[in-house]
Length: 137
Image (cartoon, rainbow, N blue to C red; front, side, top):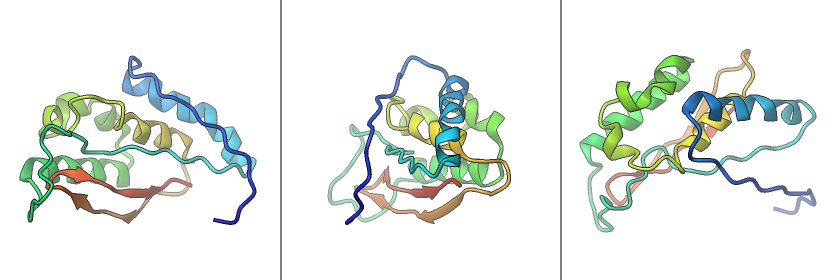
């Protein structure tokens, strides 16, 4: 909060495939190794057409997709993540447009192969909008 650090923002290119998105993260990894902080902001499940502001429960389709992604990230199954559109349950509902999801791919690319990603917090809002907080070292 009181940090006096420079900030550089980047836009994502939604036309690139998942492997190309991951490679962007790999190219950014050198900055992490120089103690730069990289923050990728998006949503794993992000379908604004399906949110219900006063929803009391999490939609099953959203939970299934989010849990599938969590499992693949925690187990380092990049091939499955890259093929999420064909492999993951309910991917068409969970990720109707990729501009929020691809930030996860870029963040994965910045991580080293020694430390496993950590899921710091996992919450849903409005029935199906996932707001997971990951740390990739």
